[in-house]
Image 1 (cartoon, helix red, strand yellow):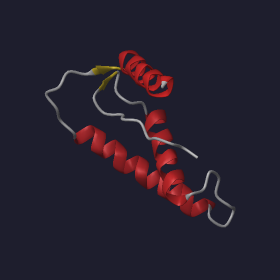
Image 2: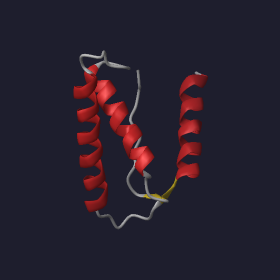
Image 3: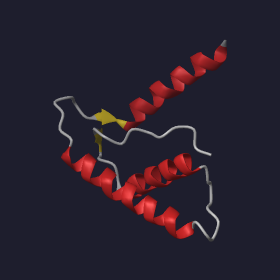
Image 4: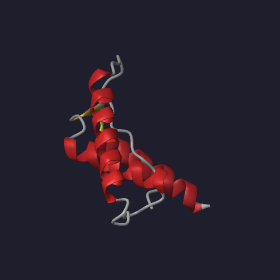
Length: 89
C-alpha cells in the first residue's frame, strides 16, 4: 500500500501524464484500501482513477504561483537527507 502521495505541482519539467496517472492510482488505492481490486470492483476502481486523473490534470493546469520552479533532483536529495536524519536516531 502506498505511504505517501508526492507533490506534482511547480516542478521543472512539469509533471508528465504518466506521473499524474500514477498519483491517481496511488490515491484511489489509498482511499479504497485495494492494491488491486477484485473483478467485481475493477470497473469502479478504473473509473475512479480516470476521474482523479482528470481532476488532477485540470488542477495542475489552473494553479498559479510566483514561486520559482523546483528541481526534482534537489528536492529528492533534501528528502533523502531528512529521511537519513529521521532514521539515524
